[in-house]
Image (cartoon, rainbow, N blue to C red; front, side):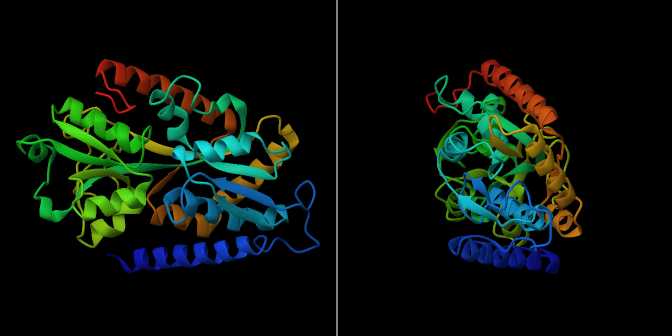
Length: 334
């Protein structure tokens, strides 16, 4: 494992602990009193629909640390895990549309979860304002070294049913593996967990054979030799895993990524959205945040709200067509 990687995770962990402590006290320190303040001096809360310590949480805290100075108000992160972020999204929808409550919204909730639940049960992105896109994160299929699996062909030759851990129903983790195993004619059974951390733990402990996990969460264990990467679900090989083929290289059409954006309640005034976007655009250019992206293998996707909406709507249509083509039921019933 590289020294830079160790430092990055140590820094991220320390930053998260500090942010949690400050949140408990009422917020991070805002800008100085002589700075222009974001419409009103009330704090901004950024909701995260996942547990502390995961990729989405760390991204939210890295951004909060940057935008608080530019906006001149305290910015805190509040974790509301559950249902792949749907609980946090529901809370966001009920907040006052003044820009003081935001959310780091995971793309899988917009373009995969609707394919796994009954119509109308998943949040609809039409019910929110989109401040800005943030970044994309690749998935990697991993196994414990003791499993003996190194390739997709090894899984196909196992002579038994393969168990695969997912980070939840209706996630990119689930979709990537369902598509891979269906195309490779591998008999496999999904075992859903609630997030990347328990999925990672299950793979490390051998409770499941494999799991698809976001690269930023798995890379440390891979570099430490505790996980074996089989394929990535990226469009091209990530720089941190130059010797690991993509699923596409292995002969299977499975490019699946996680994407994230900043959402606000529907009806938030345009001038407020514009001011927020300006602050986040400035944050994206900060050297500390660029290093955070690089260390966590995140691909910038810092597009405006309407472009992000088009991307995610297109993904929903694309994935709907793919699961219909391969007769995949993301709800769990085969």
